[in-house]
Length: 98
Image (cartoon, rainbow, N blue to C red):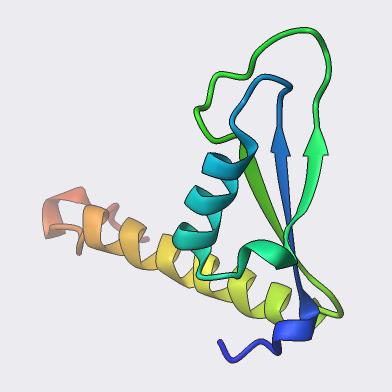
Protein backbone atom coordinates (compact mmCIF):
# COMPACT_ATOMS: atom_id res chain seq x y z
CA UNK A 1 0.00 0.00 0.00
CA UNK A 2 3.06 2.25 0.28
CA UNK A 3 1.85 4.04 3.42
CA UNK A 4 4.55 6.42 4.69
CA UNK A 5 6.06 5.11 7.93
CA UNK A 6 5.44 8.38 9.77
CA UNK A 7 1.68 7.95 9.17
CA UNK A 8 1.55 4.52 10.86
CA UNK A 9 0.94 4.55 14.62
CA UNK A 10 0.78 1.11 16.31
CA UNK A 11 -0.73 0.72 19.78
CA UNK A 12 -0.42 -2.45 21.84
CA UNK A 13 -2.94 -3.01 24.64
CA UNK A 14 -2.11 -5.58 27.32
CA UNK A 15 -3.17 -6.44 30.87
CA UNK A 16 -0.96 -6.17 33.92
CA UNK A 17 0.74 -9.52 34.33
CA UNK A 18 1.24 -10.10 30.61
CA UNK A 19 4.81 -10.26 29.37
CA UNK A 20 5.28 -6.83 27.79
CA UNK A 21 8.53 -7.69 26.00
CA UNK A 22 7.17 -10.97 24.56
CA UNK A 23 4.04 -9.13 23.42
CA UNK A 24 6.11 -6.38 21.78
CA UNK A 25 8.25 -8.96 20.00
CA UNK A 26 5.17 -10.82 18.78
CA UNK A 27 3.41 -7.74 17.39
CA UNK A 28 6.60 -6.31 15.93
CA UNK A 29 7.29 -9.56 14.05
CA UNK A 30 3.65 -9.90 12.98
CA UNK A 31 3.35 -6.35 11.65
CA UNK A 32 6.95 -5.69 10.56
CA UNK A 33 6.93 -2.48 12.62
CA UNK A 34 9.93 -1.85 14.93
CA UNK A 35 9.25 -2.31 18.65
CA UNK A 36 10.27 1.26 19.49
CA UNK A 37 7.36 2.63 17.39
CA UNK A 38 4.67 1.00 19.59
CA UNK A 39 2.68 2.86 22.20
CA UNK A 40 1.89 0.45 25.07
CA UNK A 41 -1.34 0.81 27.03
CA UNK A 42 -2.39 -1.26 30.03
CA UNK A 43 -5.98 -2.42 30.62
CA UNK A 44 -5.87 -2.54 34.38
CA UNK A 45 -9.32 -3.85 35.13
CA UNK A 46 -8.16 -6.48 37.58
CA UNK A 47 -8.69 -9.33 35.12
CA UNK A 48 -6.44 -11.04 32.65
CA UNK A 49 -7.18 -10.84 28.94
CA UNK A 50 -8.02 -13.91 26.88
CA UNK A 51 -5.18 -13.43 24.40
CA UNK A 52 -1.57 -14.32 25.07
CA UNK A 53 -0.12 -11.17 23.49
CA UNK A 54 -2.88 -8.61 24.02
CA UNK A 55 -4.32 -6.55 21.20
CA UNK A 56 -2.63 -4.50 18.51
CA UNK A 57 -4.28 -1.54 16.81
CA UNK A 58 -2.76 0.11 13.75
CA UNK A 59 -3.81 3.70 13.12
CA UNK A 60 -3.07 5.37 9.79
CA UNK A 61 -2.91 9.14 10.21
CA UNK A 62 -4.62 11.10 7.46
CA UNK A 63 -5.84 7.76 6.18
CA UNK A 64 -9.11 8.72 4.49
CA UNK A 65 -7.84 7.55 1.09
CA UNK A 66 -6.71 4.20 2.50
CA UNK A 67 -10.00 3.76 4.38
CA UNK A 68 -11.93 4.27 1.14
CA UNK A 69 -9.58 1.87 -0.66
CA UNK A 70 -9.93 -0.84 2.01
CA UNK A 71 -13.70 -0.41 2.09
CA UNK A 72 -13.84 -0.78 -1.71
CA UNK A 73 -11.67 -3.91 -1.57
CA UNK A 74 -13.88 -5.45 1.14
CA UNK A 75 -17.06 -4.60 -0.79
CA UNK A 76 -15.71 -6.03 -4.05
CA UNK A 77 -14.49 -9.19 -2.32
CA UNK A 78 -17.92 -9.64 -0.74
CA UNK A 79 -19.66 -9.20 -4.11
CA UNK A 80 -17.27 -11.69 -5.74
CA UNK A 81 -17.91 -14.25 -2.99
CA UNK A 82 -21.68 -13.87 -3.26
CA UNK A 83 -21.58 -14.20 -7.06
CA UNK A 84 -19.29 -17.22 -6.85
CA UNK A 85 -21.50 -18.96 -4.26
CA UNK A 86 -24.79 -18.20 -5.97
CA UNK A 87 -23.55 -18.65 -9.51
CA UNK A 88 -25.81 -18.18 -12.50
CA UNK A 89 -29.41 -19.14 -11.87
CA UNK A 90 -30.89 -21.97 -13.89
CA UNK A 91 -33.78 -21.33 -16.28
CA UNK A 92 -36.13 -23.26 -13.97
CA UNK A 93 -35.48 -20.75 -11.18
CA UNK A 94 -36.61 -17.78 -13.22
CA UNK A 95 -40.06 -16.35 -12.97
CA UNK A 96 -41.94 -15.85 -16.21
CA UNK A 97 -42.60 -12.24 -17.06
CA UNK A 98 -45.94 -11.24 -18.56
